[in-house]
Image (cartoon, rainbow, N blue to C red):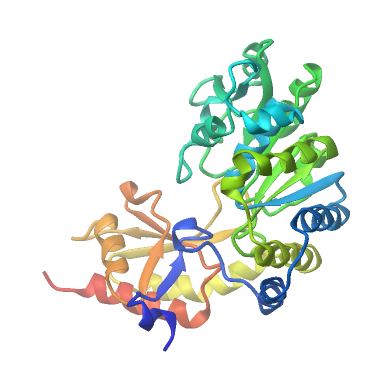
Length: 366
C-alpha cells in the first residue's frame, strides 16, 4: 500500500512548476541516501551547521553558507541577523524597543505575495518594510531616496512574481547599498544560478532548497561570513521555530553538490520534450498551443494553451484538478484565457495523461 492509497490522497501531475503547494520538487536517490544517513545517525548539530556551511561555501566560492528550513525562513532570519548584528540580547529579545534601526528598504514592485507577503517575513524578522519607487518602476534613485539613519538593509526579490518593468538591477541595488555602507539581501528563491547574485554585489543571497536545486525542504543563505554567523545566532531566537532536521541538512547539501556538478535541465532539452506535447495539444478542439519562455527571462520553456469555445480557462483548470490524477497547471494568465504547462517535473507518460484529460474536457458535450 503506497501513501496515495494509505491516506486516501489523489496522485498529482505537477505541470505548474516548482510550487510549494504541491511539495515543490522530486529528489534523487543520491539525496535520499544522504537523508537516510542523517536520519540514522546523531551529530553535534551546531558543528553540523558550521561544517556543512563551510563545505557549501567552498562549492559556491563564497565566504560562508547556512542551511535553513526554507527560503522564507532565510528572509526572516537574515533580517533579524542584520538588525541584531550578533547581539545575544537581541536574539533573545528580537522585537525590543531599544533597537530602532529596523527599516528594510525594497522596491514597491517587489513587495509581492508569493504564498505569503514578503513583508510578513520581514516583519517576522523584526524589520519594517519601506517601499521605494512605484508599482510599475523603481530606479536606483528611488531606492536611494528612501534610505535613512534607521535603515538596516536593502532587500531585492528576484522572482517572476515581481514587477519586471522599469526595475533596477541587482547590480544597481548593490551600488546603492555600497554607497551607504548597507548590506543588500537578495531573495533568489527559485533562481537557478547559485553564483551570479553574489558576483553582482549582494551581501546575502537566499535560495529555496526544493526548487531549482531539487533538494528536500530547506533553504540556503550564502554570503559574508559575519552575516552568516549572525544568522546562526538566530537559532537561539526566532530561528528556533524554523529549525531544520539533520536528515534534510545532509540531503540538501548533497543536492547542492549534485546541482553544481550536473546542473538542471537546460532550455534546449525542454524545447525538445515540449515539441511533440505541443503538437498533440494543438490538435484538441478549441485549443491553440505554442511554446513560450519564462516571463522573468530564465532558461525555462513551457506550453502555453489558449482556450476558446464554450468553456473558460478557469473552468478547464478546475476540471483538470478534479480527477485522479489531479493535473495542476500555471494559472497566472487564466483571466486572459491562457493555461501554461511547466514540464520540468513531468515525464512523457504524464504528458500523455495531460493530453488525454484535456481532450476529454474539451470534447465534453453540454
